[in-house]
Amino acid sequence: MNPVPTVSETEIPGLLLLHRGKVRDVYEIDEERLLLVATDRISAFDCVMPNQIPGKGAILTAISEFWFRKLQRISENHLITTELSSIPQAAGRDDLKGRSTVVTRTKVFPVECVVRGYLEGSGWKDYLRTGEVCGHELPAGLPQCAKLDEPIFTPATKAAQGHDENISEERFAEIIGEEAAGELKRRAVALYSEASTYAASKGIIIADTKFEFGLDSRGRILLIDEVLTPDSSRFWSAEAYEPGHAQPSFDKQFLREYLESLDWDKTPPAPELPEKIVNATAERYREAFRRITGEQSRED
Image (cartoon, rainbow, N blue to C red; front, side):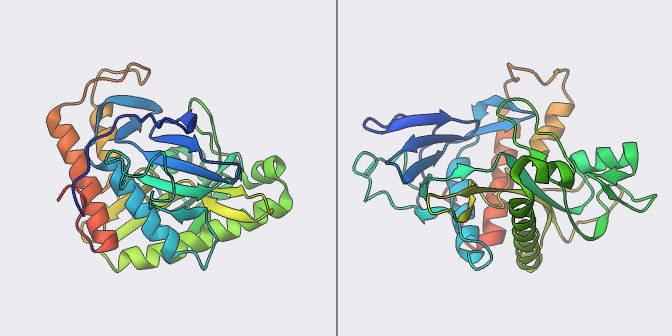
């Protein structure tokens, strides 16, 4: 893959910008399609960092495309194409190439479908406080990053601003309805299990991940947004795995740990990142891409 320019935000004359998120810019193509552009922005603790991570958006796009195609037998998804030739307003733009996805427009379920195979992050904090994670009672005395007997479904609210909040499965069902809740849980666990088995063969542990789903105009439930990327998942080195402490990772946990070491209250503005932190974060994303897809990243 050829190098792509670093992109912090986009403008596409002729397309309506619907939303500029923490990472993605979302444009309306027509009533049935959207254009998602993954920039090189990176967020942590719900704050967008002032620095970009070179090549990050292209890597997220390529990893998501890989998983959408690999897992489509488990769940239909919103991916139409990553080629821009059919979108005159975007075709030929070097800054959009490799980081853009044409997708089916959906009504998004306002929940995060989180699946955990290991005890870390907010799940570990909940466990220390209550012995449970989102209503799942776990055995006493588990160490940090312990492998769970089986994956658990731990939904969360999808906050427009601020932190997502872990919720019980009962609350999850209240928000979106019993039937939809059952189907989203089934798909999320099946997607995680299939992906975890594959990733293990590549030397990666998927500790946890989050999925999002939406309803298209025909009433179909589609897997949407990004899938099993270093932004939405914890990827650990299988050969280095050792429970009892934080694990070496191929995701933005490295950045979170650096930020935790600063005297920063996790409110905007976020601190400027040293070049060595930017480069080390970028390398972790590239390594995740290489291991999962077997290809070299766009920055290599």
